[in-house]
Image (cartoon, rainbow, N blue to C red; front, side):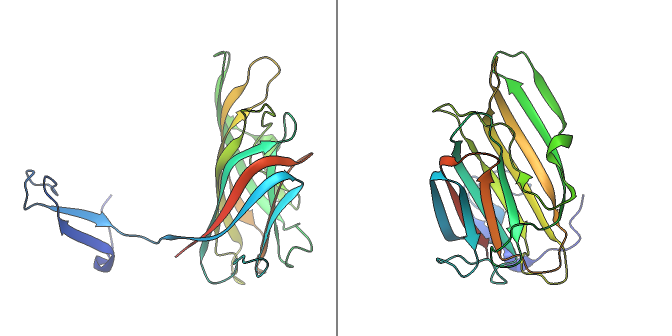
Length: 222
């Protein structure tokens, strides 16, 4: 597929030895690289038997407004306090007084069992929402063993818009609990918060019990 538009201000052309663009390799060849937006660190929260972890715009150094059009939350070794717990999130339009934004989402997963007993790629109807206000699952049944955890990201687009709904994409990888043999599971969640009000707070939690350990870091995309 050909590019229809090219912004030459974002195209970095620098001489690099041994690199080429459709030429034989040589010291005088050029290497092209695209330079996009940078990730700007905003806030990191560390769980310690925490019921919830919340990012509220304007609170404790959190920025979640029109400063950036895109925000990314990264999850690092999120560990539940008990077996088979689901990692979840929800959005707020009233600075965290309520986390109940209406959402429509899709969910699919790929998993492989440690004993090679099952390997599946499929839609996960139990984890999607159709105009639901509840928390959206970002995982399914994380194991509670000491070495188990969930890592991944949530990408939120233009939460401060008062014109459009609030799109998001999430992907997590985790050790999933099973009575016979645990799973490596990769989860894909996407959807939108069906509101034209500005989203100004995000909350993360387990569906039951606490987030025993792990970090969630918020970045703005410059």
